Length: 324
Length: 290
Image (tube, rainbow over all chains, first blue to last red; front, side, top):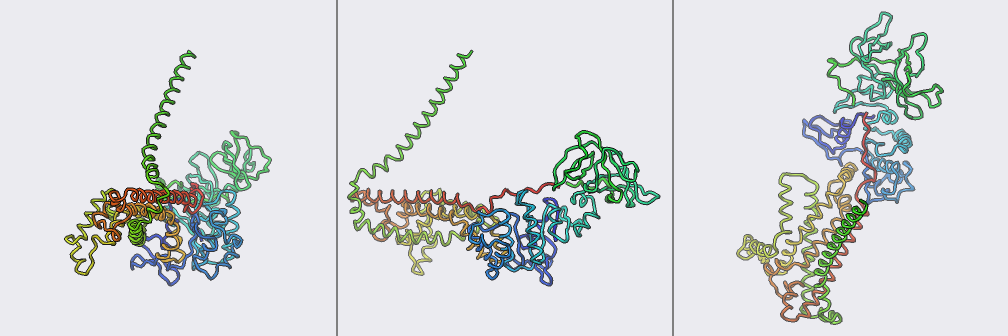
């Protein structure tokens, strides 16, 4: 389970509250039948009496202790087993200062597990790493979590990390849970515009009108219009994923697909594919796509009506928060 | 044009050189003023005689008294001061700033005032003196009075440094210890104390030096009784009249001791900056805005 949201959304506070390092003003925290915190009953178990393993954002390894002593701090019984399991046995006598970011993370996970916790908490497990080790560590961490089979709650600001590491993802904004579901559900059916933009979609706004033939036509605020298979009326957010958009130099002849004309903008490499801006939307295409993209030229962003999701905007429309 | 410019540049250059010369001269004056008396100490008595002079019974008594009283004082300072500093460093409460200021007051208090204050508290006519006398505790003019005077003037040196040292321990490390099942006591002993050790040692070195050099408060509160309350500094004072060479020898001994203390403080500071308590060398993460 992962909580995703921008910084300041309250994700880390949730983790600290579960671990007992932060006292919420109200509410209740329980693990199964065991209540850890209950504001109404003035119950607050200290952190050392809650069965949690918290992996801190910067790992918080004890700099004066060796890797083995760090792991043993949580519990002595399983030290050698955990060192072997997280592939850090060869580092057992090193001090944390000499380890790479990925190695430190494995030590932090091993240390958290040494206490044999009922739940594992991960605070931004990948944010302390630089870009080129990040993907590798994400993969290793996914393997470790799959092997452990222990309930895990992690927080991250990156939906890609959450989708790679968690079965269920909750989206948080301003201390409130906006949507909870599998990564696929969040991608396919974002509950609101914030979730849509967080999951990486293009987001346009317009006025929807149901069509007699089924689906809807949306007059975008920019003056263009798109068709969707979904039926909606009134103000809507229009979400399209970049990987559903094809860049073409001319609009398709049959007119079945949507085609938004726009000026070609900046192109950036994104996970082995090229992301290019066409007018208001981002499109994605393989790096070896032969169609020339000339910055400043006019092109068409082409996408099928079934790939367009409509999200009713909470009335009144002026109250709608712009996703940061 | 070019000539005028060159002349102006020359004038500026001369000004710079003059200023640098002034700085160097000031440093020379400072060095001479501070070093000459210390050097003189070593020239006024034949160095070969120093061991013999330090072996005089009066000096041996003073060394023993100094060692005993400072051992008591330093045990008190470390034993009580360390937990007190930990509390002040890790908890926020109303009046904390007032408490810290009170602790620092003896730093700026004239030692003679400290001595008379101790008499006012523990003297026979003082605030607590009569009550203590009833349970057969008479502090003034005893070895314990020396230890208390030393504790009073030296403890702030340790406390200040210890508070700073505990504040320097990354709170996520103590949080981590707690989530790993460590009680507050174990967190203190296994994480906070070892990580603050360098700073605590540096503070202790300063307090020790101040304690050995204690004079004013001690002579008022404990008197100057040979074999009982006469420490090395008080012995210097007495030997001025009796045997100037002995006074000089004690001076040399204390200069060597002070230099050793200063050196160990510097070495400790060096060692501390090389073993930082920072949990990682990563830059703090800045989540990318969505």
